[in-house]
Length: 379
Ligand code: MG
Image 1 (cartoon, rainbow, N blue to C red):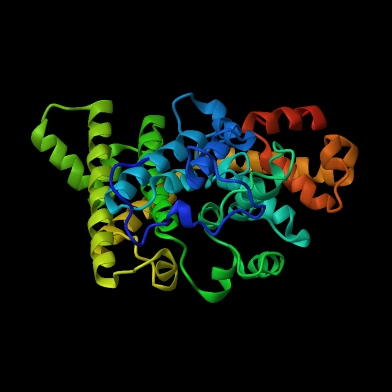
Image 2 (image 1 turned 120 degrees about the vertical axis):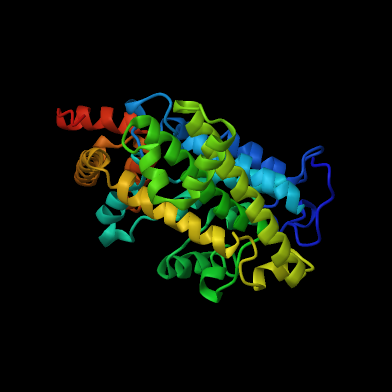
């Protein structure tokens, strides 16, 4: 449990909107601690270790995976959350679960699976994360999924297309998808995880990008004022610093500045709006945010990473091959259900079962499965 008492605007685990299937309270843990623990013990969570963000898992042992990314989001989120006196356990639960629905091969996987599923309802990774915790995990005797609290599920469903929100809301009226129809915000804990996600990937993609040799720290500093500022500050204090330590110290300073920026901007927004409860937070505009100056700086950094790293020819080449792997797998499973494991082969919605199975794969399992089914190795 955390040291500081929760603010009135925090999600109080004792007043959770509850689980879809009611369960007796745990003797020592709060409801959100319990959600966090269920997520850590899930199969989907363990798979994150072999799923990638930008670089493929086999390209290097030191690049971020979905697991280390999720841990970094949880660290940043808890750090900011404690300062804002919101529920740290809920922040951690949402952060650790936010990428559970990600396909193998990062965003390339998400896009290609969405394309394959075009005629069958599409594929969204946020919705898939919710599917994992609501339906796909098979661990408990009494229910499918992890039966998490409303607040945790609300945070996991970060985005949702209107078409899907209508379907979800029909199945669960007034539930986690309702805000996509009414325009409301999620809890502060959920808002915090979104911003922490952005801070985390901007920072670690610089780190991975520079260490991979695909982008240079000087190139980055000359194009992105935010990086230039902290590079200069570091060199002002340590004029002979070079290499990894210079990179790490520049990123560390930039990360700290962003964390303090979010805390002070959010503190100011909270003081002005003075929400008396989480339900009031949900009716207000988003309160967790950067200052306008840091928002602009972060957007500039994102733009650079998009153009110079995510669209780097080497990353693009990997992307094209990864897309082919998933396209081939989808076509094969769709045409021949016998190639799926027995529990996926008997689904009433066969295309969705194919997408669920593929989305659950790690990078290396997808490559092995592709080799088994096609006889070709694309990497
Ligand atoms: Mg993320």
